Image (cartoon, rainbow, N blue to C red; front, side):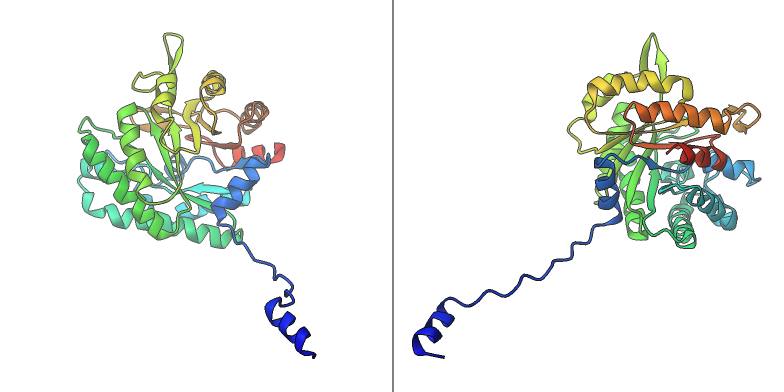
Length: 318
């Protein structure tokens, strides 16, 4: 190589071909990308009422939270059945295992055991289902069956502690559920976001004086204003009667610009016991779900009374 050529080569080296960079998305990022590209995502149906329907005894003041320890095989099977129907998100059976619920039942010392067991069973169901892209959502609520409600500070701390356990156990996101009061839902959001996981908000509503309102009476419009700046990527209308979903979506159409999900319920409770004799048929629930999807809903599933047959029927229309 001549001197001038050598100097040129040293000063201006021939570039090497660029090597492809492998970018690995998390399960959550991959799902959000699909939703942004127009895909509709199927989530699971009821877990608590399914535990009850299959004979798991309730714990007074904390419903069916004990299933994760007392009947793990049944609970795991419920998750697996939803995955087999095509659900891509399953929610842990932790709705009633918050520290404040367990405290009201006199078993607060089982908080970590119940939360960890429920998360582990959801992970096992995902592994058994052979679908690694299924997301596990950690379910948290401020709901309580007694009048002994925690303070807002205690509620935020309880939500934080439970969400951190869920993140450590492998949950992909936090699913706040049955939020029925603005101050309390804000406390839950603040606590859950400490985990570092994405936090989705699930509102339960009913009509009051012609307006859709949280179960405690505050309007859906005021609720959306209150959480507008709280980095909430998705709102679910959940544990809300099928007949009221469209009215809720009317409000979201004009007051919410994030993603929207629906998992309605269709189960009545008598003296704390679920009644399964008059629930909507899988075909009719799928028909209603199709109409919600046509309105732009991106996430669809079911709450109390909505079983695997309903989720499988929705899968057919997706």
